Image (cartoon, rainbow, N blue to C red; front, side):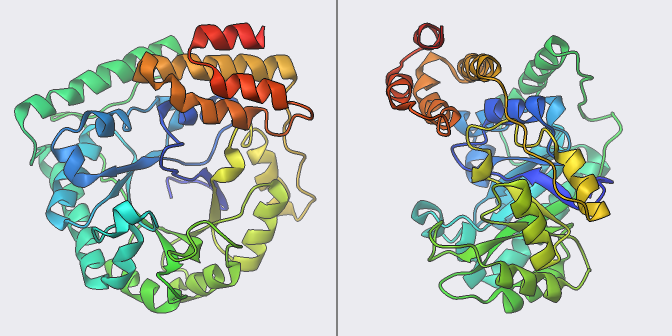
Length: 365
């Protein structure tokens, strides 16, 4: 996996959370081994949905950064994979785990567990799209006015890279191209645990790696993640490709426990990063401790002035990328930033009622 030394410890994709600003600050304040975007619908991407393309803005500090796609239409995965390649991502991940009804009622996300042949064809068509782009550099399935967004997004990335003194990387026809890996993120079952039988179908199409969330679709995000079921999935894969464990990993101790329990080659951390872009600050020390069998390091805790500055910078970048009306989306992040501060009820109330960066500056002054 991108020559990352095991165990891989990365930032999990989370719909409505891991947008461009969130990912940027998680990588600025720490450094996940790998970063995933929010999932984007393949049809919406091919048809040029403005918000969906916005979800694919990324900064080069996030590398390796993987674009996550969802849907139930193999032919659109083929075209969407080419778009992902042309935008300069490092990998393509297929969401087969989202439990949201708006996703599963259309046969996508975790609903694919019930249609394994369709799931296999989606992997095949995604890989074919990557292969064809690698050979020809051709982007297909989108109209010219949509295709014009690709250089616009590259220009935006170049601007962000120059501002932060980071080398800019991109691909276009005629440049050296890379054959992107295709991976899958899924759950242990639909309404019951069927992880062993389900994973056998995925083995047949050989994803580059597999992430297993330890809940069924029926559980949504309730209850405890079933690490025993993840371990069964790891056993079924039997080393044919890496498996990343996901679910209820919130601390460095959790990382140690989930890796010991499941024998997975890594883990993705999701909700544990809420309001904590510093979560990965000591991740390399953590990996060294795991390799040596030593106690895990303490997680980094910023000073309050440093935390306030990050909150403000996060809000500014969020609005810069998405526009002033998007500020309301920042409120949940602001509440998460102060969730562990004692006696912060009044501060939290002000933060979630704020309407602009200017108001936030006054609150934090």
